[in-house]
Amino acid sequence: MTNFAATAGDRQVVLSWNHSASSDNKGTVIRYSVSAHPTSPTGGSPACDLLGAPGAAGSCTHTGLTNGTTYYYSAFSYDVSGNYGPAANATAVPQAPVNVTPSDVENLRRTDKR
Image 1 (cartoon, helix red, strand yellow):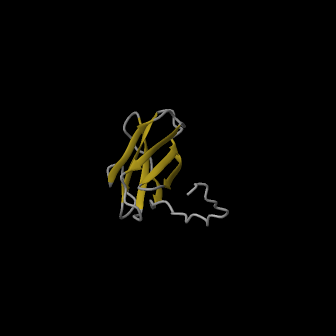
Image 2 (cartoon, one colour; image 1 turned 90 degrees about the horizontal axis):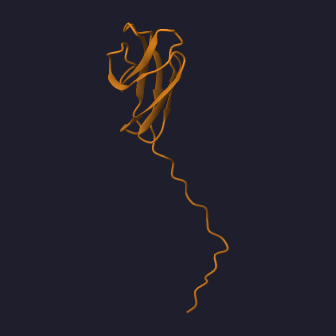
């Protein structure tokens, strides 16, 4: 498994990767925790588990998260025999969108008649 990334959004994290290029690749399972990277394919809590052809791109969106909390992700590829590869790790902190103050209004002209 390669190119594992976690991109934070508002109450969500988009996870992306490329499945293992091994000819017997079956898929990738991603686990998460708010304290440390899970160290096994059964550690932490499940974020997603997707089947995928060898080398194919994969992605999922982990939703319902708490903004400002650090989420630690570990991705494990697995083959048709149920063997898991080593972890690939990523971290993300969801954030609320930044509110932009509107600029001052200029050249405003009243058009109604009294």
